[in-house]
Image (cartoon, rainbow, N blue to C red):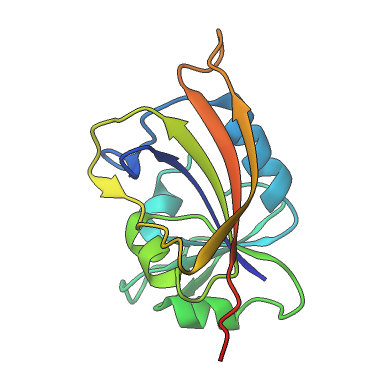
Length: 164
């Protein structure tokens, strides 16, 4: 199972200057619960946006840089090679950034999305989710509060089965 996981504004904005443009502790908590103990695949810039590697996860970094080798991480040059490094019988998470999401959309089976209810300025965007290919199977609304500056909805999409 290959799962894309992202937090995305209503205009598909992901972030600006290699940073998220919101602070949603419940989204961070969900991300941690879903990805802990699993392989996570990301681009180099996404990896470098973390202060340190995320604990209890196997990091696979996609980069074109030949000598890039952060300690404790697997480094590859394509999304296909990243997937080949993962166990076949486990859920694997694609965690960004924008170009990696675009490349992995056709290869993925599931999308765990946090839809942030707002339109924000960004320089990185999530690809459009084609309703012909994806079915929304779960939604849970969370209202903004003193810890969350936006309303947001947890959504789960499953890839539709192609009929011959």
